[in-house]
Length: 222
Ligand code: CA
Image 1 (spheres, protein in one colour):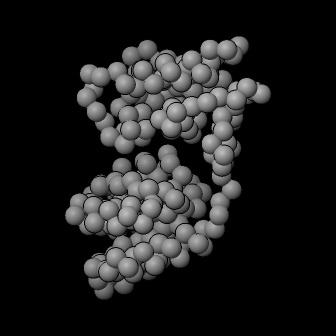
Image 2 (cartoon, rainbow, N blue to C red):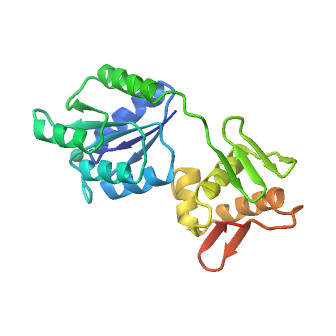
């Protein structure tokens, strides 16, 4: 289960992240509304914990944007005490539930579990570009009839590329999403992994799917 926390108070964000990770969830954190919206658009989260008062873009607006775009990810709003108008506004803009700060972690956990149950077991999406198929329910990758064995990092990299089919991704963006943080920009880790992936995906195929965009990065497309 993949959870996104959008919270600018780093202590609170880190406290929630640690607690949820201890329960076995995978957790991403965004510290402002714009970053939160961006990662929520890119990734398929099972749940978003969304603070309302955020720099750059407030939580209510962020929630409204996601719903307008058809994202149905359950959203749990974190609101300041007694801010009833905030809660109403949040629920009006598509939030599923809210929790008033400060809260006990157990209460948060109970809400999280309830929302994840309500979301139900989603049918994991099968991603396909040309004859390249990635089945996230079995983690199987095929090019036509040919099965492709990937390491977990290569699999994450391919998933990210396929989620963004047709979009040119620069190295920093790829680093951030596949490795979770950006590392020394003088290293060529992204290029190394792209090259490994290419060998497995494209080498024996007629049609190349991973393309280099000179001076920028990479794009996966037909
Ligand atoms: Ca805040």
